[in-house]
Length: 205
View 1 (cartoon, helix red, strand yellow):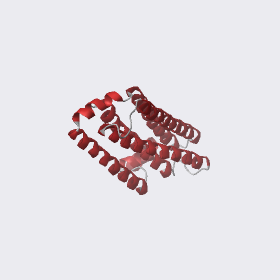
View 2: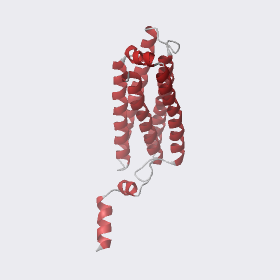
View 3: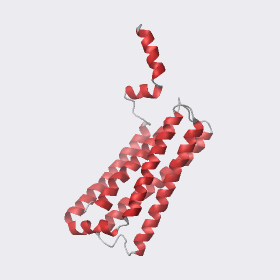
């Protein structure tokens, strides 16, 4: 009887679900080493932000009003959409639906490119307004945080192209997708950093 129940459970729940129940950490050790180092880097930026905000409260209260909030909101929506597409890509590779997985990866890549285009325009818009790293302490922190994040989105977008190439070569399947999963985890980390950066720079007074 218990053996039948066990077999039924395996039939009802996919292997990925069973792995989650066992507490398996997604991705692999190298990607988590990279993520922890990136989180440390961004953590230093956040400490610098609050330190500067404490010493220059008036400048940091006025700073967000100088930014183009519409572009910031647009990029927030773009990155949230990209995380959804990346999650859908992982869901499809786990059921061996390679065409749909690739389609969602292309959508995530498109979102990455859109983010880079919008952020580049925002930097240009700031320049037209006369804002630079030397404008004030707020803009010094703003450019260090946003340009660093810009670079992360850039090389993660290139990584998506590499994963698509590998997918077409048959490198990933429902049983073997740790490389794609590692990219997905890294991409979600980048999106999370933006979710923290956006209110600090564009909203918080």
